[in-house]
Image 1 (cartoon, rainbow, N blue to C red):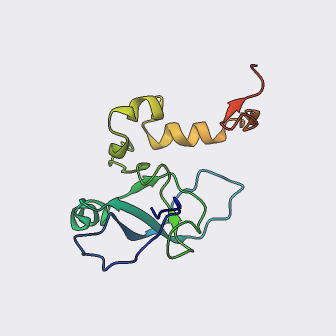
Image 2: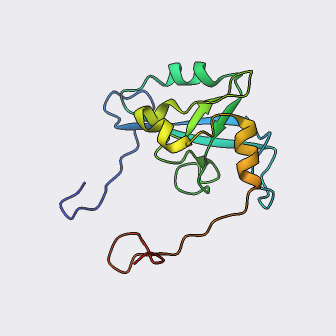
Image 3: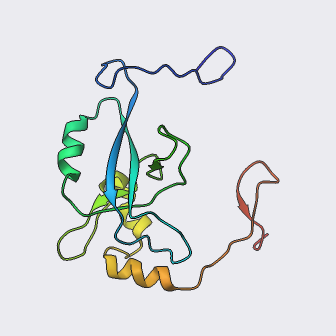
Length: 150
């Protein structure tokens, strides 16, 4: 942060010990995007940013050759601008077991509350087919609030 509270970024070498965070790019084959309206390429780059203390080799070994599940943001926030960042600051990514169950360990103790029982690919597929619920929100007071329950 600069004196004017503006964030000043300095690009460092990937293995520089002074790095606060690192970006790892995973090239993945898309098997299911869970959104029939979305046009998702069959192969994408997923940008996963890591705390500077996280060993990226451990992360890469954990994902290599695995079937992963990730909630992604639109490309453009991280470099390269074509990569899809993992949502919730990189926490919404996990490995899918052979049985189809999944876990998002980056959520730690909040995982159960976030997943709300959607712990298998089949459960997520069923939920994705359900009608969308749109919540009316406003930031009129400077924070997100629902306008249908005021």
